[in-house]
Image 1 (tube, rainbow, N blue to C red):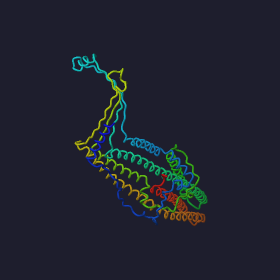
Image 2: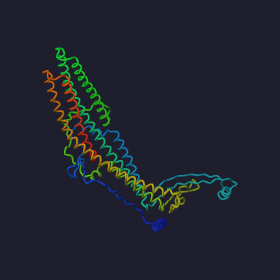
Image 3: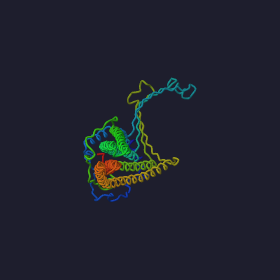
Image 4: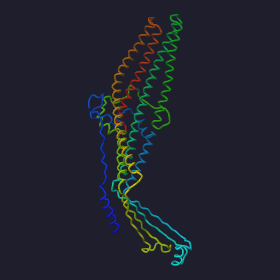
Length: 470
């Protein structure tokens, strides 16, 4: 043991005289972030993204769908399996600093030529024509982590694990937002179906009135044809809406990991409730909260550790190997202790000199990859700020659009009543009634669409700010 200790001390001093330990420090890239988001009234440090999704979405039916999606969505389950796989690799990386130990048992019989020197020596000294060798030994190999190579390898594994974790959170934010978007789209289609069915009743009444007027000679057959076409157009719209509702229900079912089928909903679009006074918080806080941005930064940290590994590969490495066990040329006394015991220790210092420029190439490539990841990180931050800004401006604009669309729908709905009264009194023709009904139908359908877009913009803002993974 004293000799082994002396070997280790000798090589340690030799390495210390070669160079100093190389250590790469990580410097976070400078980001050109605005102080506040555009289209926000105040620079409030709080953010709606800090709310858990159960607090943000208060509808029990939507909460149930999101809960199913988080539990059963296959994309999310695949991501979780990737996390588990990376976690196993991380556990293994923690043992890189320990020596490798193996155990082997071997038996060998050699029969040299009788005309060879070995054959004649065997016959002369041992009185036999063959030689046996039986060996059972432990083998140990250990590399000293002088330049931080092993530590950086562990750091790479840790960054890869954290990337899969952040990727899972990013997928969950997307799944939560997609389920909410699909649910609100379904409520919009329900509302449009109600509007179309109500308009169909009006079209039927108009057609019945026009047929009576035609029978009494107060209008032409053209009026009947036009009223019939108006009714048929609404019936076609209802059929299209039924198709769209079924397709949306199927899409939602798949999102929550179930076979396509009916989706229960107990409220109408007008009864939905989402936070209206939305605070976006500060851009700097958003960067640390968005899983995809955080994942990109972890990739940068990983590339920084890979540069450290490539740099350490250019320096001398100290490896110590040892083996020991029992050895004998006769099986009968193979395990006689201590006569059959043997052991050896070897320490080696290896300095790469000429590797066909491979080590320098690896280092340069690692540095270039780190620079690429710096640019990718900055781009991800820029994209995130853009998404938040888009959602904010959409939300503000859709507030005004919803108000204007509601006013237009109310005006045109009153216009139907006026047109019908005038038509019955003979002061308006059938075209004015049909036009009023068609305009009102389109205005109400548009209002439902704008309301859905407003809800979608709020959900988009919640996701863009990094909400939905808590």
